[in-house]
Image (tube, rainbow, N blue to C red; front, side, top):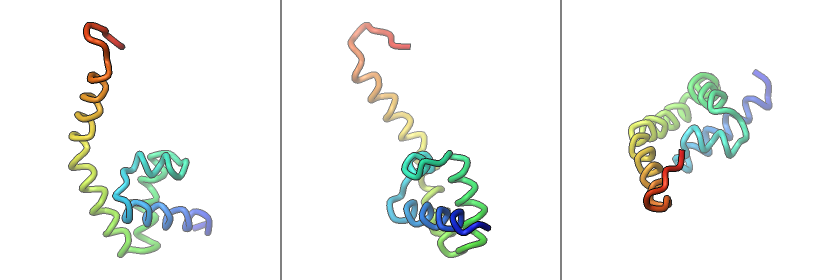
Amino acid sequence: MKDYIEERVLELARYIAETGATVRSAAARFRVSKSTVHKDITERLQEINPGLAAEVKEVLEKNKAQRHIRGGLATREKYLHQKPGSHNH
């Protein structure tokens, strides 16, 4: 594995472990795709640092379990900021 990829994997993993970031927010922060974050964390990290991989997996599982809550809050926020009677599509 190339050194720069390994470094990115470790930076992503540390960021997620320390902040509890979602795959989406980590992807935005590191300017890579969600697919790249997912592959880095689920496949590459396991080869590089299995202990950190287990730690990050816990964070991702927690985020996945809470995903429906974040989605509902985002929808609520969207409709709270609309004017009554308006239909934004």
